[in-house]
Length: 69
Image 1 (tube, rainbow, N blue to C red):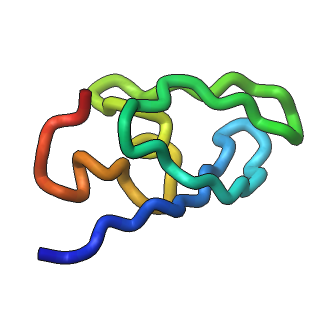
Image 2: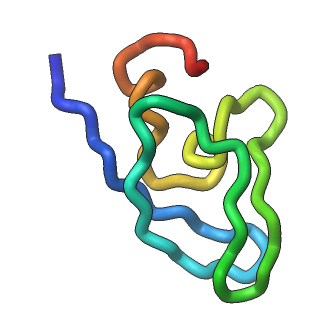
């Protein structure tokens, strides 16, 4: 089994800004506000959180092969 990666880079679909983030291990993160353009990121349909939609790494439960939240 591989180690879970907790760092992900969120890329804003509106302005392209990249924001390094540490993912929570105890909850899904449904919203993220871009610091550059103030866009409110929400998961795409079928994704459980903003990291699965816009992150460089999927959330910890998905990395482990589980369903998220």
